[in-house]
Image 1: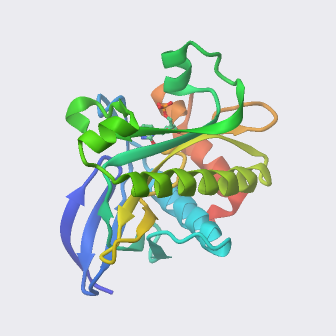
Image 2: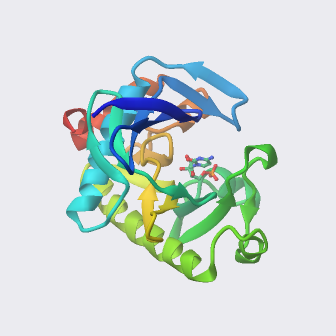
Length: 238
Ligand code: C5P
């Protein structure tokens, strides 16, 4: 497999073409950003940890019959994925109140919700990724109503599996953000990553934060937190 040209550079990853049609290479970077890029730091080892953790979690989803864009991990910081056209929506699922939900609705962080809730955010840096309603999504023609149903159902199913999986490793999945893409045949596939950058993960006993909030809120060493997650799920061997 040969790495081709750089297609896209995001805040935490680079995407390259390969010599195989329909296959792209994702390279995880050692950079951490928060608040729409306002806070930025290089954190040695973060790329390796996120590549390992995401690879393990996607493999776990494949094991329970959920398809994703992930093909395989090919180096400490790189993985191969299926090419998809990303739907410009961030699909957030929450089971515990935290972050913007606590702030927006004045709820206490840590409150457990009876049922998980799904929110959609419009992926647009210049607008600051605003929360959008299904009517807004329709207005902007970001996804069809049928696709939105699939996104919601798939996101809830994935959350339930990941919630139970983390629970078996003594970690509470508080919330996460997913991104989906369309394949060339129009199927919807889970894409992007599932990592401590995109999830809130708390130690089940102590509620210690083991995710990007450590960086966002300046709570300590980010790689120590991510390493704890990798160790608990055996992510370093994926
Ligand atoms: O900030 P907020 O509470 O809305 O975040 C909900 C979840 O989505 C968190 O797990 C956060 O890490 C994730 N998220 C993300 N990328 C964003 C915004 C939120 O991964 N741009």
